[in-house]
Image 1 (cartoon, rainbow, N blue to C red):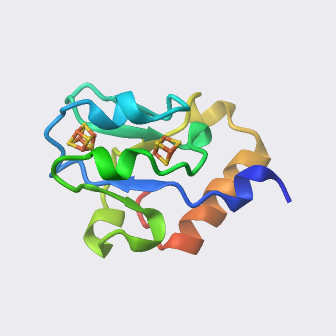
Image 2 (cartoon, helix red, strand yellow):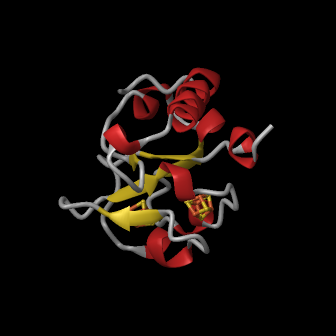
Length: 108
Ligand code: SF4
Ligand code: SF4
């Protein structure tokens, strides 16, 4: 089993995010960044489940994947890879699909 298969990662509800940047600053692995809309986005393959980002969010819009509200898990935009999707290895695509299935993530 690779390390990545143990990851739970986090869900960010960008509709609630106020763009304060606190989670980006708190992440020890540079796994969060602000997108073009100034909303926090998770970089899937950098997250290592430290969960330092969760308590610093002033509007409580970050959760562990398994604890996030169903409507938040359906939304797009809050997660991406550090490289273009067409450059993902088959193993990375498989890990992503397994993670989505395990935690009920339904966006593409
Ligand atoms: S869970 Fe940890 S590694 Fe992942 S985004 Fe949050 S602070 Fe970063
Ligand atoms: S800490 Fe919360 S409100 Fe601030 S940027 Fe991160 S997700 Fe958005």
